[in-house]
Image 1: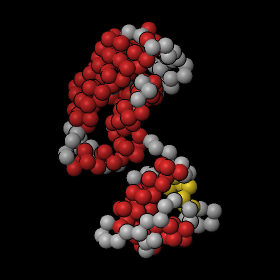
Image 2 (image 1 turned 90 degrees about the horizontal axis):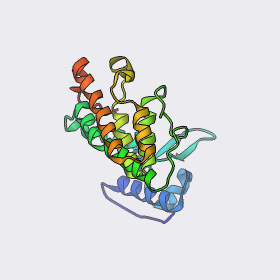
Image 3 (image 1 turned 120 degrees about the vertical axis):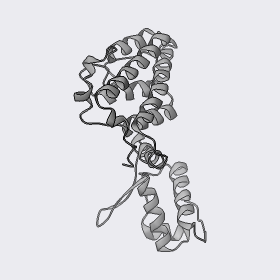
Image 4 (image 1 turned 120 degrees about the horizontal axis):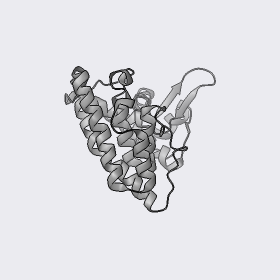
Length: 228
């Protein structure tokens, strides 16, 4: 880690930024002790602890106090992206309808890209793609399609949007077996390399889900996104 001396009101934010840079460049999985961090960054203990609180709030690190504890660097997850995004969505007054409408634009593109990857010679294996079967968790299939595109930014964004809307009783409100397009049909289209069909089926799948929610429980769609 490089030494860094900063002063002023934004000290903690600057230190947090330097720690993130060091995590990336050095591939850190754990941070050094507080004493070492104070020496390296040459800041006060309150500023360092505030910097660590910032990183913990964003899910970058997990702090475990006491003997045998320490500061662990977390793997990047879409849930962290979703948590940060949901704060701004909430402040903007965006609803779950807004989130699902954006998924309606993004996820058909995912299906097209996945199918085009098959055409390039990469095999789509429904047994390896978690959730490709109709008995699997709904989110797993959509996550698998996003992952198969090979685009890490799209994966982070798409799965983050999906995780913002997680309703435990969704299957009761809109049973997947009642949707006109199944996961298996989308999976078959991707495996065949038919990009237009894959895109169309994914759009119909999400559109029918959105329409069913609109009909059965519109109050859910009108809820402002909660900062969870």
